[in-house]
Image (cartoon, helix red, strand yellow):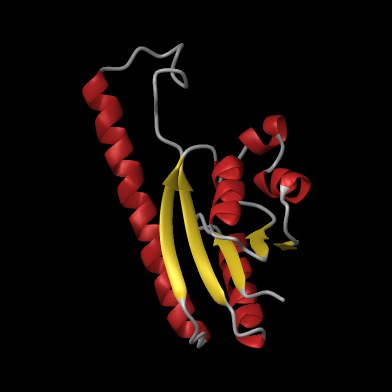
Length: 147
């Protein structure tokens, strides 16, 4: 049933609880996990009102990628602590989180998406709708939202 589970992580407590739940499901159904972190790079469209030097934007994007690698490293530790022994793929993607998570689920032929109810996006959630809400609305596979 749940042979391949996409688990988006962003370093939040909610994401770590979702990862733990995904490990339980993966163990129960002898499935594999695709642990995904999505970083939103700075670009000119996002910074229309703030003129920044191209070098500053490039450095900021490099910093974001380093943070993404750190989140994946934490995820590896948490998977090891969970005792999950099935296959795990760790991936990083660039773009809008809900779009990239949905694309990853499709590209990976996932059977489910397990994600936290609240991430690190802060006030943007209030205005744009949460990532978990968008995923549950548009996903083609079952979605488990962990509180």
